[in-house]
Image 1 (tube, rainbow, N blue to C red):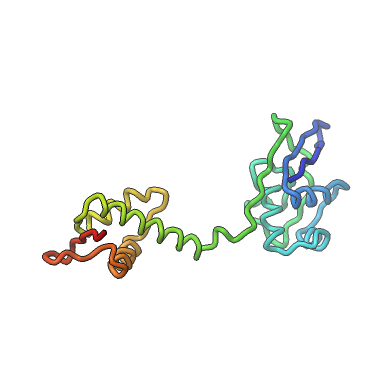
Image 2 (image 1 turned 90 degrees about the vertical axis):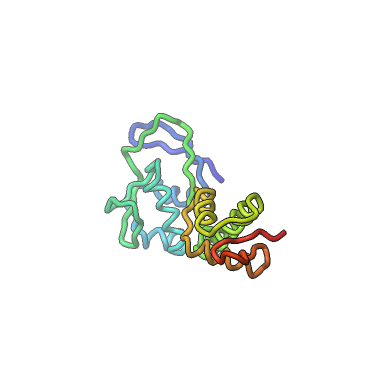
Length: 182
């Protein structure tokens, strides 16, 4: 991380708390003028998948220290950037967060984490109730997993997987009811 001292149109100085990449990008705007996305790509020697979130954090976030044109919330290869002469803030020290560059949010990993959360909720519920009908189990799982709304089909798949792994079994009298095995 780096601390960059910046002064804008009103000559008021700000201490920007930024990542190293953001500091390097900001230094390109010291001389003034406009830079295109391609110019920044060549000067900073960064790939598009790194430069887009970098410029997004500086031009589309809460603190728009860089102005982008055309004005939108998405970064395109045709955009141009310049230092924001009208930037002002009540705070002198400003932290500008950088978007995560790692692939921790890729869909496969998220789905894998969610299946684990769904299975954990099913086991918790069944451990407490011992026997439960399918609709009640689905409703309980949906109410416990408030931070995301899983598809009932996926919950059914996870129940089947738990039956295969012998955490649950179908009730002998009612095929629509599950028993907890421990």
